[in-house]
Length: 385
Image 1 (cartoon, one colour):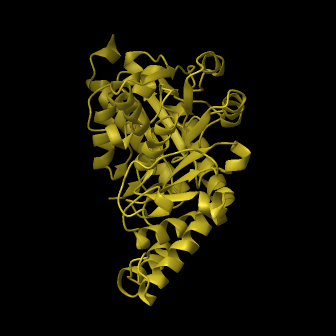
Image 2 (tube, rainbow, N blue to C red):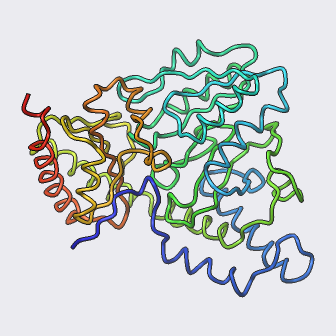
């Protein structure tokens, strides 16, 4: 049986070149980068080089990069970190379709007395810019809007939102976990103050990420200890993981155009062929302004979980939404925010392509999906009504 992985928005296989770059830092160059002897010096040199590589990949300065345990910690540091410096400012603006790492952090801050405005999106997942600016108050300290949505792939107008933030002297953070390595990401072009990165979304190791913090941004740490990472994130640095992240980002930059074109061709072919052979299906998210590897479809009269399991039996790995909330039976908060009918919300499937997928994979998935949807609709009492 074929084994086809199409859940790259959840995680990606680690590139062999990334593995090769990491291996020496487990056994040969194993020192603590804070130690003063030569073993520590070698680790510190690797840390410095990795910081430079990550910075170059997004057009930042090395000193503006803070290494973390991943996208979730980066989001937490960005959102919670600006609050202590702005005790008189207790208002945050975000969107209704953010990742749980942002939404749950905002919910926590609300429980601590802060106020959060959740800006709606249109039916294609684009943030309502007018309502966002109308939400700005004198005590607004931060706007946090993701660069692209992890479920439906819609890319947000970050530059336009940045202009609003700058006009009102408000910090602006974007969760770029899904965009780094897939589309061009430059912090000066986007004009953001903070930007979150995760390694395992770009063929790097799990458990490592980074937060870009623009020079001059007033932010406090949320983890305390030995003042690592310029005092912003205590804890002995994970040198093998950080080296892996840097290598993965460098490779992603080198391959960006080729990978993006390859995935977009597969994406468009799969969408077109599915619409040709399967009725009562809709594409979720913006039809054009979306990630090159993202396909989010809703099939009427079919349960997404049933499709997922039957496709898995055929060797195809996809998802019904965010991997961080996939074990929940609740309807997707993202799809609910697009005002979809319940039939479509519960019949959704997210297919996220990777550089290793091929057009032969697309052929197999299209036929398998056709068989799966037909089988489930034959079993559904709703489809015959």
